[in-house]
Amino acid sequence: MNSYAEKFTNAIENSFFNKLPKHEQEFIKEKSFEYRFSYQEIKQIINFARDLGMWDEKRITAIFPEHPQRKVVFSRLKKAYEDIRNKPNSYKNFTLKNIPQEQKYTFKTASKEGFGLGLCPVASEKTRCCNLLTLDAVESCGFDCSYCSIQSFYNQNTITFDSSFADKLLNLQLDPNKTYHIGTGQASDSLMFGNREGVLDALFTFAKKNPNVILEFKTKSDNIKYLLENEVPKNILCTWSLNTQTIIDNEEHLTASLAKRIAAARKMANKGVKVGFHFHPIVEYEGYLDEYQEVYEELILKFSPQEVALVSFGTLTFIKPVIKQLREREFRSKITQIPHEDASGKTSYPDATKVEMFKHAYESFAPWQQGEDKVFFYLCMEEHHMWAKTFGYQYSTNNDFERAMLGAYCKKLGQEFLL
Image 1: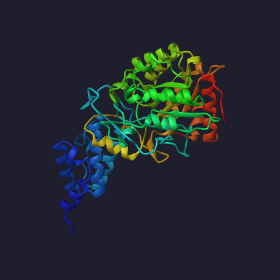
Image 2: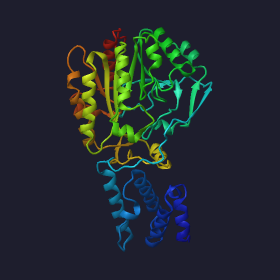
Image 3: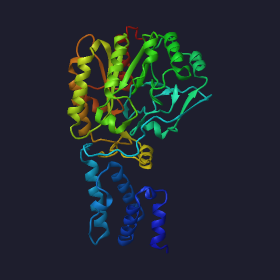
Image 4: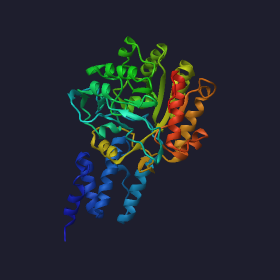
């Protein structure tokens, strides 16, 4: 029979045990031997400790209960951890740690196989999806948003450009009698690298050649120099991912400030380019509704509905590889400190929280929801039933959603909607 020492050694393998502070490692080992925790219990306790440190909350040593029975101890420890995880976050006493102060990455060009034009990577029949096509002009991102899934797919420190991107775009054959919606902000930020490697040159040429394509640039930057200096094809939408400054400061590292993003959008609207805004993710924390309300009101004050094509809402949705990657990092973030409920195989907020955040957001934009110039609103990556609870209406199918979106965009852009 294996000794408990062997069981403990096996349990901490391929875990985050060695990333914990030494005194927490010693504490967990001591308590494991004292209570003879099972293999899975040890694994979970290590994750509890790792998360509490990342969230800058009470540490495992402070919440560990005392009781003679192992099952009671573990049950109470798990409840104490979940109580901390499920309570509304507060950034008031949160201290950042090991956050990069400047963008450090290397660039490379490579001839990629295939083209990188495909369906949105999170498209699913379980959620209401707009059938967006994505174009990977660049792979990986120079920003460091704690919640971003890009970090689980690419080497975050290497930015890769396809050396044959322009040629592939020129040779791309599309149906001229169909309207396409293509986004470039999925595998990277659309604008942060500007026209490096001629990416924007190629995309502008593509947009001019294909007037039936609605090409969407999505960004958290204020790098609009190229767009200001060149004539922007009318079928290009420039959209900004926005958040409260609290979330930008604590979770969206190296990105442009809220004020700079809004100012950049204002400059593009002044140039006659249609703009849009993505509130994704909306994050729950103490006072969050009031802070988001301030952002919504600022947009309504600074933009007219005629200038805005779209506003989308979404929230935190995690896949297991992203949570694991976050635990690997030596930094602090509260982004996984949320009540975990299954959302189509992923982790997200409970429905009641989502309804609160989305309904509040939608109702705040009431001035943009009426008349000929009304803005198109939608939920991103949310289950079907969430629409009716939030907007008071829903689409029966993804295709219905896509048609409504494309029709609204074409009307705003002044172009024909081709089915």
